[in-house]
Length: 398
Image (tube, rainbow, N blue to C red; front, top):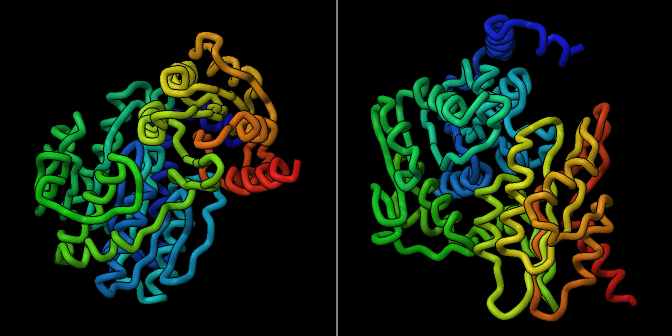
């Protein structure tokens, strides 16, 4: 019924409906964000990692924080996994969370802000002080009706936040986001910006250039709140890893990494950073269903062909689509250089059996997500990391 209403209702009516829900949620919970500093992080990739790093910096400076990311809900020291399969929850859930954060005397709340959330006014009636832009690459193109619409949707968030903007100046879309007025603007990049790697020295255990950008974004947020660079560095040096983000699950005799990457840009960055010099890289990947971004399925396959020595295409989150058909669409981009294994556990098992000493296995698309989502709302409990460990133990016994 809900999907039918979405299809037949005019856009302006749907927009008003979502706006009304946002207002209702804020009214019911008495506009809880007004007494806290709210930081919103938006962009295609890196949002959850930036939130984790910002949280560490603020806590190192002595502040009590709360946060919502695609990984977890956190209020002070209380944490629980985000099992909603939603990066940005609905209006009532967010406002209820903010109320609880205020009751627990949190001074800061850091939230992921998604394009779908902006379209549905989930960011409305939240008193955002800071807007952070990580990067922008094609994603949700079909639902937004093109990349420009996707970019403009993200821009609406910056238009609404007037106090502080933090922007990745190395991203080719940075000029668009810089045009929106703010009382303070901070930029970051590899070689330019207010904070860059030429004049900033810090030790970060997170691998990859993209995590340098994530760290720089977090440092900018810290500086915007009057936190000195030494405190930022001290906080970042304590970060050992982010769940499901380039997470090393097995170290010997070969390495196994699990990563959330499901966009072409994110997938390529992961492969570039993990590609071994003198051994094989075995890659397990899939693509999401639900009619979302079908264009990228063969693109993901093409990227895998470029970097991976062995490719296994498997099921990810088919929702209401035929998983075998999704796999076939990814396969089309590989020029026939891939194995197709529908069962994800079996695919993981195969990747481990193929791996020899010093090889690297990369399993992407789900990270630390707790479900595989099928048709009619069915959810199968899942964790790539757990499955890897279980199958590895079985291999060791044989």
